[in-house]
Length: 320
Image 1 (tube, rainbow, N blue to C red):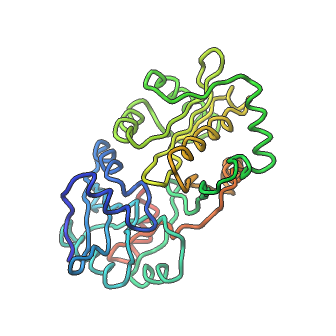
Image 2: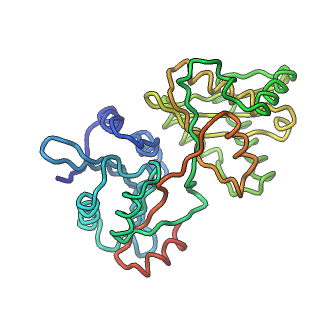
Image 3: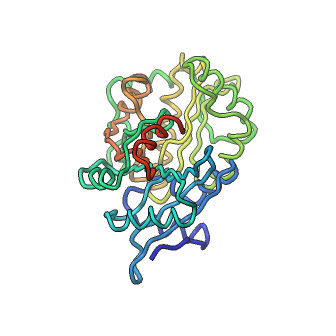
């Protein structure tokens, strides 16, 4: 049976915590954040008898003549052809036949799920807003954290300590400086607008109870580098990271990352997901994350469905 989940945040988060392949995009708090940004958010479960087999959170927005059904956290549970066909049918009943279903799977890529999605007319798509690969750092090893780091990463971390910078917990008085270093980074790396004051306000307000957020400042209290992770149970994911022009000169990103990882260990985080990577387009970030001792993996990735196969291929490029 397929039905909408209408219980509390704690009930939802407790339910999804039992599934493998969980991503923070499935958390109730992430849904509330997207609601504040204009998305309609719904949560659904599929169960047989008394067993919940699948759970997923969807974001809905009108895109031209279509309703985009975006499932960024993927469908949690053991997917099969019967279940996925049921989900497609039920979403058509609830939101109309003129829908686009887009699903981001964080689980490891595997032949069975790949074939299943292909058989049901989903197509694999690429988007600048979604990374198909990531890195996982295992924090359960009892040895000193820095022993996981590459020789170069440890060397740059030691360099960072020479500048007498300080790592603190973030507070809202730092908001203007936070926006400033994001603007610097956008200009330096020729990036699209990542965050402004309003979008950061939404994000930090909705997710504040889940965040591990460290900042590195110099002796004049200038903000040099930030790193923020979202923690749930024994898992954490990279969420925000930025470094100013001055911070790049004194390796402050190494110092602030080290302190975030130490805090994760204190809070019994077992695995830290360093989030999206792209070795070809951003080799510097790739090497930085790899240097922590993390292991690269390929996700099942981003898939899209529309009942018209040829139109679906066109829409995959047209709608972001």
